[in-house]
Amino acid sequence: MATLRRFRPDDLNKISKCNLDPLTETYELGFYLQYYAKWPSLFLVAEDQHGNIVGYIMGKLESSPDVYKFSEHYLPWHAHITAITIAPEARRLGIGKLLTEQLEAIADANDTWFVDLFVRSTNYKAIAFYKDMGYSVFRVVKDYYGDHYSDPTKDSEDAFDMRKPMKRDVNREHIREDGEKFEVEPGDVW
Image 1: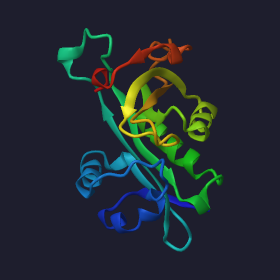
Image 2: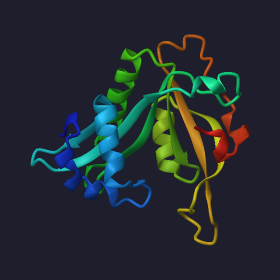
Image 3: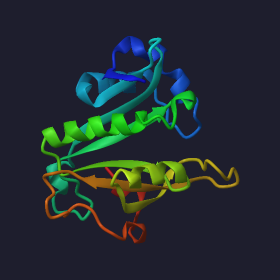
């Protein structure tokens, strides 16, 4: 079984096995360190009994700038999952669920309206995983990804913006049942 703990800067040398998955977005070193500095409680790793990092989740707390408050695309106070990945040998052991539940608990403790994330529209396993955890598609972001995972003849791929309401959203104001019908452009997403 894996142990969850906060990310530390020396973990950067240990997460590469997790990042080998072609569906995992990878970032420059400074990006990881920015999350560590700004949102340390939302950057968690899963470590196996030998000290190997077998998964991680990066998240943040945010809202749209007030200047956009009356825009249809305004995002109120929420948590965002920027990245989650599990090493191939550690998949289907519940580690992704544990990491996500931990981030959700922190989101609730910070009185957020929802947790959201972006996932490739062709990443069917991830979509099923999130739906099993209570997430639903809020909207489709057209051509969000600059490449296409499963079709090299295409230049881009859509993303599903998926959300799960937190305790604060008693009336479920920030989710919708038919989100696949709502399409937005990448410029509409902050």
